[in-house]
Length: 181
Image (cartoon, rainbow, N blue to C red):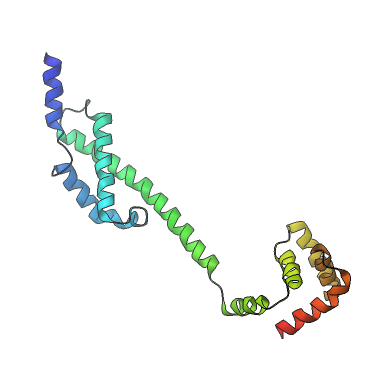
Protein backbone atom coordinates (compact mmCIF):
# COMPACT_ATOMS: atom_id res chain seq x y z
CA UNK A 1 0.00 0.00 0.00
CA UNK A 2 2.84 2.35 0.84
CA UNK A 3 4.47 1.84 -2.60
CA UNK A 4 1.21 2.86 -4.30
CA UNK A 5 1.13 6.06 -2.22
CA UNK A 6 4.77 6.77 -3.03
CA UNK A 7 4.09 6.20 -6.75
CA UNK A 8 1.09 8.54 -6.56
CA UNK A 9 3.25 11.25 -4.95
CA UNK A 10 5.82 11.00 -7.76
CA UNK A 11 3.08 11.31 -10.39
CA UNK A 12 1.89 14.53 -8.74
CA UNK A 13 5.51 15.62 -8.41
CA UNK A 14 5.90 15.56 -12.21
CA UNK A 15 3.00 17.35 -13.89
CA UNK A 16 2.04 17.12 -17.54
CA UNK A 17 4.12 19.30 -19.84
CA UNK A 18 1.53 21.92 -20.93
CA UNK A 19 1.46 24.99 -18.65
CA UNK A 20 4.16 23.55 -16.38
CA UNK A 21 7.42 25.14 -15.27
CA UNK A 22 9.12 22.65 -17.58
CA UNK A 23 7.30 24.12 -20.58
CA UNK A 24 8.29 27.58 -19.37
CA UNK A 25 11.93 26.52 -19.27
CA UNK A 26 11.61 25.00 -22.76
CA UNK A 27 10.12 28.22 -24.15
CA UNK A 28 12.91 30.30 -22.59
CA UNK A 29 15.58 27.89 -23.83
CA UNK A 30 14.17 27.89 -27.36
CA UNK A 31 13.87 31.69 -27.39
CA UNK A 32 17.65 31.77 -26.97
CA UNK A 33 18.64 28.75 -29.05
CA UNK A 34 16.00 28.25 -31.74
CA UNK A 35 18.27 29.76 -34.42
CA UNK A 36 20.58 26.75 -34.00
CA UNK A 37 17.90 24.27 -35.08
CA UNK A 38 15.68 26.41 -37.30
CA UNK A 39 16.56 24.60 -40.55
CA UNK A 40 15.66 21.20 -39.09
CA UNK A 41 12.49 22.14 -37.22
CA UNK A 42 11.19 24.91 -39.43
CA UNK A 43 9.06 26.74 -36.90
CA UNK A 44 9.08 27.39 -33.18
CA UNK A 45 6.04 25.19 -32.45
CA UNK A 46 7.78 22.12 -33.90
CA UNK A 47 10.83 22.79 -31.75
CA UNK A 48 8.56 23.18 -28.70
CA UNK A 49 6.97 19.82 -29.56
CA UNK A 50 10.46 18.32 -29.57
CA UNK A 51 11.07 19.87 -26.12
CA UNK A 52 7.84 18.22 -24.96
CA UNK A 53 9.10 14.91 -26.31
CA UNK A 54 12.35 15.43 -24.37
CA UNK A 55 10.29 16.09 -21.22
CA UNK A 56 8.32 12.86 -21.53
CA UNK A 57 11.45 10.88 -22.39
CA UNK A 58 13.19 12.33 -19.32
CA UNK A 59 10.13 11.56 -17.23
CA UNK A 60 10.09 7.97 -18.52
CA UNK A 61 13.79 7.45 -17.81
CA UNK A 62 14.20 9.29 -14.52
CA UNK A 63 10.71 10.05 -13.15
CA UNK A 64 10.63 7.08 -10.81
CA UNK A 65 14.07 7.92 -9.36
CA UNK A 66 13.73 11.58 -8.44
CA UNK A 67 12.36 12.89 -5.19
CA UNK A 68 12.16 16.62 -5.90
CA UNK A 69 11.13 18.80 -8.82
CA UNK A 70 14.45 20.62 -8.63
CA UNK A 71 16.32 17.36 -9.18
CA UNK A 72 14.07 16.51 -12.13
CA UNK A 73 14.43 20.04 -13.55
CA UNK A 74 18.23 19.64 -13.46
CA UNK A 75 17.92 16.35 -15.35
CA UNK A 76 15.50 17.90 -17.84
CA UNK A 77 17.82 20.88 -18.44
CA UNK A 78 20.72 18.54 -19.11
CA UNK A 79 18.66 16.42 -21.51
CA UNK A 80 17.35 19.53 -23.30
CA UNK A 81 20.86 20.86 -23.74
CA UNK A 82 22.21 17.52 -25.00
CA UNK A 83 19.24 16.81 -27.23
CA UNK A 84 19.21 20.23 -28.87
CA UNK A 85 22.99 20.29 -29.22
CA UNK A 86 22.75 17.05 -31.19
CA UNK A 87 20.01 18.57 -33.35
CA UNK A 88 22.06 21.75 -33.81
CA UNK A 89 25.04 19.72 -35.01
CA UNK A 90 22.80 17.89 -37.45
CA UNK A 91 21.27 21.22 -38.51
CA UNK A 92 24.74 22.57 -39.30
CA UNK A 93 25.52 19.54 -41.45
CA UNK A 94 22.24 19.92 -43.34
CA UNK A 95 22.84 23.66 -43.83
CA UNK A 96 26.37 23.01 -45.11
CA UNK A 97 25.09 20.31 -47.44
CA UNK A 98 22.42 22.63 -48.86
CA UNK A 99 24.91 25.48 -49.23
CA UNK A 100 27.31 23.19 -51.11
CA UNK A 101 24.48 22.07 -53.40
CA UNK A 102 23.54 25.61 -54.31
CA UNK A 103 27.20 26.51 -54.89
CA UNK A 104 27.68 23.50 -57.15
CA UNK A 105 24.52 24.27 -59.12
CA UNK A 106 25.47 27.85 -59.88
CA UNK A 107 26.35 28.27 -63.52
CA UNK A 108 28.51 31.15 -64.56
CA UNK A 109 27.66 33.16 -67.65
CA UNK A 110 30.42 31.63 -69.83
CA UNK A 111 29.25 28.13 -68.86
CA UNK A 112 25.66 29.06 -69.68
CA UNK A 113 26.70 30.42 -73.06
CA UNK A 114 28.71 27.26 -73.77
CA UNK A 115 25.74 25.10 -72.80
CA UNK A 116 23.44 27.09 -75.09
CA UNK A 117 25.91 26.80 -77.97
CA UNK A 118 26.35 23.07 -77.52
CA UNK A 119 22.60 22.50 -77.51
CA UNK A 120 22.73 23.29 -81.23
CA UNK A 121 25.37 20.59 -81.81
CA UNK A 122 24.68 17.39 -83.72
CA UNK A 123 24.00 14.15 -81.88
CA UNK A 124 27.41 12.70 -82.73
CA UNK A 125 29.23 15.79 -81.42
CA UNK A 126 27.18 15.69 -78.22
CA UNK A 127 28.14 12.02 -77.80
CA UNK A 128 31.85 12.80 -78.22
CA UNK A 129 31.58 15.65 -75.70
CA UNK A 130 29.73 13.39 -73.24
CA UNK A 131 32.58 10.86 -73.47
CA UNK A 132 35.10 13.62 -72.75
CA UNK A 133 33.11 15.05 -69.82
CA UNK A 134 32.11 11.74 -68.21
CA UNK A 135 35.32 9.81 -68.81
CA UNK A 136 36.65 7.73 -65.90
CA UNK A 137 39.94 8.96 -64.46
CA UNK A 138 42.03 6.41 -66.39
CA UNK A 139 40.54 7.39 -69.75
CA UNK A 140 40.69 11.09 -68.84
CA UNK A 141 44.43 10.66 -68.17
CA UNK A 142 44.86 9.04 -71.60
CA UNK A 143 42.92 11.88 -73.24
CA UNK A 144 45.12 14.44 -71.44
CA UNK A 145 48.20 12.69 -72.79
CA UNK A 146 46.66 12.77 -76.26
CA UNK A 147 45.94 16.50 -75.89
CA UNK A 148 49.63 17.09 -75.14
CA UNK A 149 50.46 15.43 -78.47
CA UNK A 150 47.95 17.57 -80.35
CA UNK A 151 44.31 18.49 -80.67
CA UNK A 152 43.81 16.19 -83.66
CA UNK A 153 44.99 13.12 -81.72
CA UNK A 154 42.84 14.11 -78.72
CA UNK A 155 39.68 14.56 -80.78
CA UNK A 156 40.35 11.39 -82.80
CA UNK A 157 40.70 9.31 -79.60
CA UNK A 158 37.56 10.85 -78.02
CA UNK A 159 35.56 10.13 -81.17
CA UNK A 160 36.88 6.59 -81.20
CA UNK A 161 35.72 6.11 -77.58
CA UNK A 162 32.28 7.45 -78.59
CA UNK A 163 32.14 4.88 -81.44
CA UNK A 164 31.98 7.61 -84.09
CA UNK A 165 33.20 6.47 -87.52
CA UNK A 166 36.69 7.85 -88.30
CA UNK A 167 35.53 9.52 -91.53
CA UNK A 168 33.08 11.70 -89.49
CA UNK A 169 35.80 13.10 -87.21
CA UNK A 170 36.95 16.01 -89.44
CA UNK A 171 33.34 17.06 -89.95
CA UNK A 172 32.65 16.98 -86.16
CA UNK A 173 35.83 18.91 -85.44
CA UNK A 174 34.80 21.60 -87.94
CA UNK A 175 31.31 21.72 -86.38
CA UNK A 176 32.76 22.20 -82.90
CA UNK A 177 35.08 24.98 -84.05
CA UNK A 178 32.21 26.75 -85.83
CA UNK A 179 30.02 26.55 -82.70
CA UNK A 180 32.75 27.92 -80.44
CA UNK A 181 33.77 30.83 -82.69
